[in-house]
Amino acid sequence: MSPSDVPINWKRNLTVTWLGWFFTGEAISLGMPVLPR
Image (cartoon, rainbow, N blue to C red; front, side, top):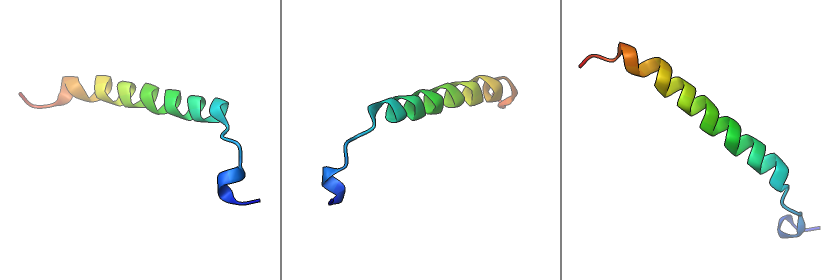
């Protein structure tokens, strides 16, 4: 079975994408108040 024949796990991709988006938003919201103006 070649790598191109492996089915894409869309549920895992969706979970990883959502977690990345969530943690990026959290990091921005925590970092913005302490940044110098």
